[in-house]
Length: 129
Ligand SMILES: [Zn+2]
Image (tube, rainbow, N blue to C red; front, side):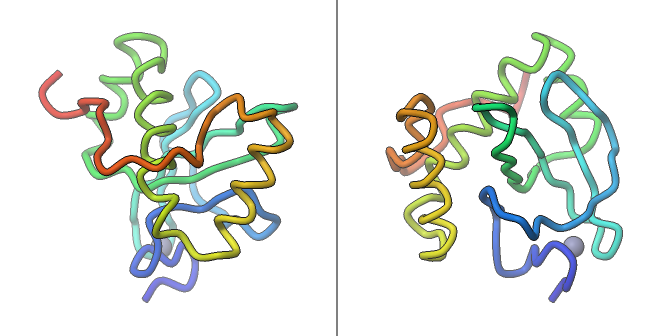
């Protein structure tokens, strides 16, 4: 069990005041790849609108170089789309407190991201690009 990012028990962090402090691996276009200094898990981190005040973190299941290659191929468009769909996929199984944070963000952003529309699988391909 990692006391820093809790990677063993969660795949996502929704906007809250106690996000773990990770190490920047690569800073991109309003999105970054970060590594847990304790367990070395990779996380994709992005501040969502409004005011870039709603930061989410989701686990990155591939290698660092994959993230950089996909990010740089279209200025982060695919990575952003993948991340939004990861949040939608993980929403139904998130802890009640995390769901409440996502619900509050949806209200605050007037449903702009539609993050509570749960999906079974992420439609964005990050495999063989
Ligand atoms: Zn960790």
